[in-house]
Image (cartoon, rainbow, N blue to C red; front, top):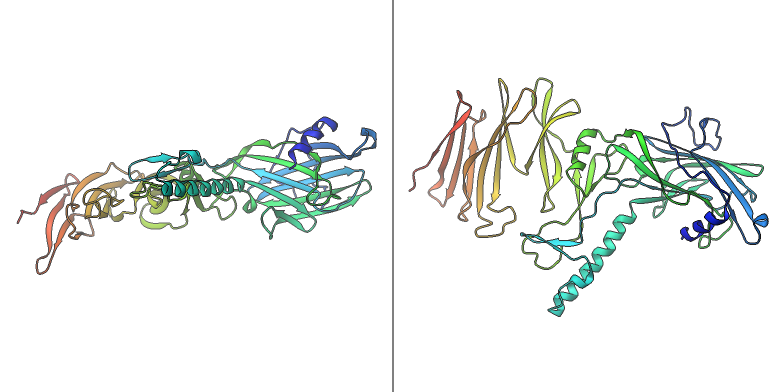
Length: 456
């Protein structure tokens, strides 16, 4: 643990300037080669410390000037360390990085009705014994899972002479170079954004950094911080960093989920959402808390175009059951004009003179979770709305469907121009499909006239 050592250093070390400043944008011609010619700005941080026993005069002194710079590609770090030991051994520099985290949902399980909180092991039921033991085992598993998820939000990097290695990983996570000079050494490193910890913030506006200069001669289990920034230093960026092929979509998707995060870097086109999913009849805990729902924002399906406006559907939003709902998105270039959550429903599109007509069709169980009276009975229902020439969606008009009251199948059809929509009950042979309801579009008003089939 570095913290107790750091507290000792605060008392023993000469004053350090530990107010961190991070340069936005890398120095011109930056190369992680251990030469610091390109770092012309004042240092981001100065550190000083001592190590060893005896009087202060007999202790080994260390001081450092550090420079940090960030751009969309990652973090660059450079330093000049003046050390009476003047040796580059072990991993003399360690960097820790944390970004704004996602919100962890409460430790709980959810049935079709409500969320049941289990904040402590003692909140598990006491009886019957078998049920209590199962709940306590689940609680311990979830507590370990939550700690693992949270620990991964702080990245710890060792700057080695052969590269940057992130704690818990074996492959290099960046480049680093050291160069000795009489009385000390210099170093430079580059940590790419793809090696950053996950974050819930987009655009990325702040980061927290800690730098430790370690005792290079001690064993791995006894190494201490010879000089340190003492604690995480938080920096707010004046020019936030944006990631992903469609940054605004990424930002809106994150805003829809308090428990969502993404991996910065060039491939920032997916989310992980921490949530407690609802499970039918889950009256004792079984589902993970949290479950990790993955959302792939690259699965963009083009539906229509109106001038320079495109209409697409994209999986964006985790629903309460742990599935992923799609959004309709109207956009001009990468600028989003409007959105609408359509769940997993079918969408039919019919362009017209003023924009686009849209029919959203739900076909599935009467209750999406399959619970309740006839909750698994087949049902079909409709919603009709439009997108105008400015890319805005109208309010949806709900149209009657059929089903939901028996186990017999249902079916539906719609003409290509959406002027005719029909729903059917499917009866046993030889009766087959029987019309249940018909909707006919009035071109004058843009509204549907509904007629139901006569009961048999």
